[in-house]
Length: 612
Image (tube, rainbow, N blue to C red; front, side, top):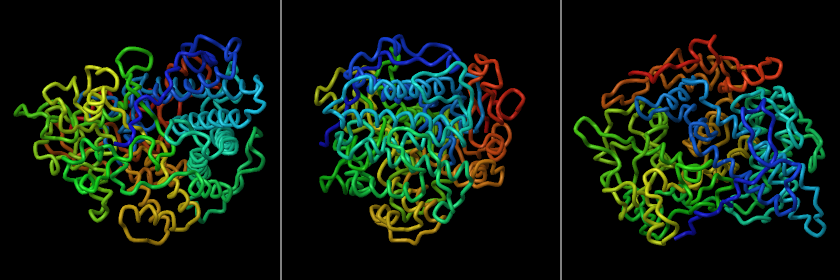
């Protein structure tokens, strides 16, 4: 079996860093400060571990994590879950059900920014003579993470408070995402790419790499040019060079050709490669499950199994370890909670039949949130093998699957990429024991102690934030050439096609479906201020009338307050700034609510889940 990474994240999340001022949150992030920490270069490595740990803090609540929120807001997925899961429905309908809906997302974003900045401004307090490569790698990783947290913040909220110093000023007002923050994000990724070296870290060890920085730079650049500059088709657009702020590693304005050069370097020199078969990216092909799952039995018969966490195609990811608990600051953030949320809807049908037993093997029970929208299934050709490798058609593949009396927005289509997986030997009589394949594996290898909650806690598959196929598709989209796109298609056994803007958009939809990237792809293809007729608004509006099961009966979806197109036009895809933060500042010149949100916008607020 491939090595399974359960203990890859250093347990250093309690060490002190900097704290942001109260305007960014209502409580202090940390206990120590830059006056007494870090005291040595070794402390910087502890801070770096704590910096990566912020992604696990997001993971404690998937409904406040960038990957899951963007997934549900897209036309890939429905909020779904149960009839009482108001939060997931609100996010899926681009509305809010409570003022605190995104409080933790805001908090974690600024924790990450503060921790990254602490490293950036402390690194040269120490003598690195003879260790310059180590210093540059550490600094490059900090720049990478600061750029990533700011990118998530801008994509969530747009104009936000921002600073590029050791600590936040007081006050720290909102600044223009387009004119100020995005160029700084691009600069951070350039600095990261220039400071880090290929092969400086072990692939899949959870650290950012030079190749990851180059890929994330392209993602940020394409969002900037597409959404903010409304460039349209990037391959043919005449794009002005972007002036970047001065910082280490940044020497020139950023051109489209320079971004393409970075992508070429990541593809050709980063040490990454596509896994042999698309299905091998996903944990249902693991060695314990694949022999009993007909869909992948051909792989098992050939002795080919899951490529594993940190595989050759993963370029950056959120990692997890065997430390999940409902107690503590991070607690269940050490397990992949998105997997639990995406499991087969728990509860029973009217005849007391339930999902998640041996009859549904290898797909496990969970909250049934983030179900695949029926339009994605209908739009996707059966000739593309990635369709059934990505989407579980539960009624067809699992004869004993049921629509429960509590289900909502469930068309019977589930996201195989994130679902919990079971295997022979799972404890279907006691979900608290060895229910998932991870639990069975851990038990057989005596890795860690059982957490007595396998159903909720034994989920350790990476959340892949960037993989080589995505980078290759960005290359084709920027260059207008089909070569890299066709390599991705060839892996799926599909014939070559010519480049066109529609072809590359379709290819991104199919290859990356269910990975949380679709929503911001739609936004950048539409441009800011696109209104109800832009591509994003029209794609989201197609959810209206799509078929769903509600409490055991078939019906169709409708928007909870107005329409998806109207809500997208009102918000431009930005989410609500936490009202608690606006209350803290109490000054619109420092922080004000985004357009389309607040008590004065009636269709922004959902009082309960939609009844279909």
